[in-house]
Amino acid sequence: MAKKLIGIYGASGFGREVMPVARDNYASDDCELFFIDDNPNLKEINGIKVLTYDEFLEQKAEEKRVVVAIADGNIRRKIEERCYSDGLKPASVNARNNMVLDEVQIGSACILCPFVTLTSNVIIGQSFHANIYSYVAHDCVIGDYVTFAPAVKCNGNVVIENNAYIGTGAIIKQGQPNKPIVIGEGAIVGMGAVVTKDVPAGVTVIGNPARPLSR
Image 1: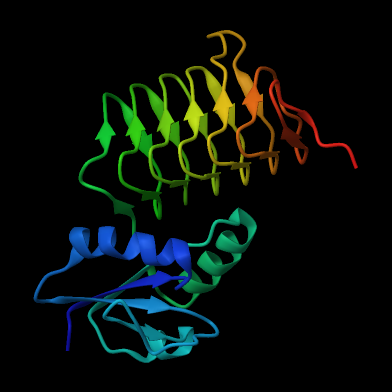
Image 2: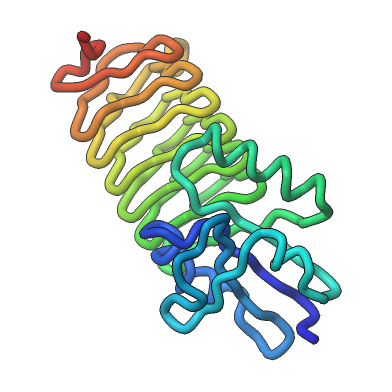
């Protein structure tokens, strides 16, 4: 029986990208890693067993941890709440080639994919996802369940509130120490958008400069 089990919740594309980083973080003789998927099509992916959630709960171990590799922050929150209520503990995944500089606070259950940079004096909440080649610059505050797609450029003095989603290649202009740029709760910044001013809660913005998506 393994002493520790690590479950990557989500066996789709992002989960398959996260697994090698998790394996590098955790793999040892007394630790075993699994994919967890609610509706698995395969029993094994890239040499890693795929279990349903109930099957993972049934596994015997001294400690079981889980990290949710699903981009939607609202879904991520619901899954984590179920996992923690069932006694699973949070795991974080952090690629070895990342740069994390001075005075960075980061919450539990976060995923930092390869080539991510967090510079100095940054505060990050729970279950943050930073995909490949993203960065967060100085004096930023990031809430819970925020998702960065690949190559997001978040410059200094920016506040990103809970459950926001920042699309691939988006750029957030630097704010001012006394007037940060604020991305509101649940806002979506589209792929390649250039954000030069505040984005209200729940609003989707696209383009350069970023403007609310018209319907």
